Amino acid sequence: MDASLVSLISFVIFIGVFIKYGYQRIVRILDAHISATKHALTMAHDTKEEAASALHEHYLLQEDVTKAISVILTRAQEEAETLKKKAFQDLEELMINRKKFVDQVMERLQYQAVQDIKDQVATLTIETVRHILQKELSSAKHKELNQLALQRIGVVLKSTLPAI
Image (cartoon, rainbow, N blue to C red; front, side, top):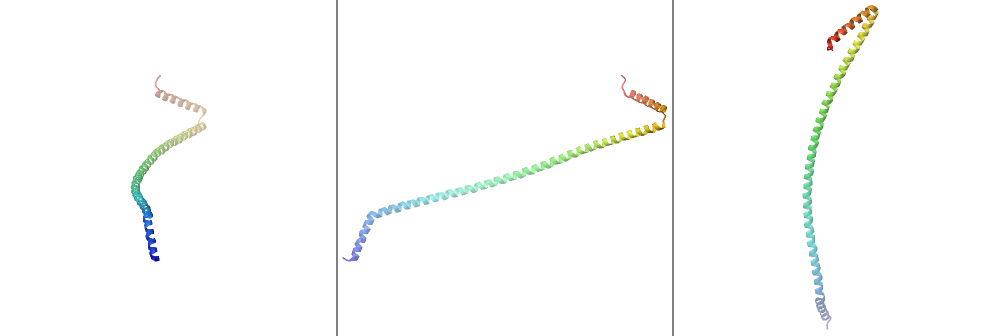
């Protein structure tokens, strides 16, 4: 027998044993591997779709948040402007009221100053007249002037007071 024939027979026997015992096993292993790969691809595809959906939802939420922030910012600016105008109005009213108060105080101080000056002038005049009279008038003349002044005061008082 020739060596190549033995090799051929050995190879055929090997193929037969392989087909009978190993082929089914290898096919099952490959089928399981193919099935697992298909399942992994399906899961990856589903995950990809979920991620795309989540990303789209994220973009929509981001747009909504951006719009809400814009609205809030606009309202805050409008409210700030309103408060600014109100503050200026309040300040203007306060300044007007303060000016009126200062004007009233100045009028009272001016009136009081005029009264003080009048009182001082009257006091100085009386003192001057008294001093002049004491030097130039005699005591009898002085008493006579006092009596005359008292009589005039009495007449004025009787005419201004109601009768009792």
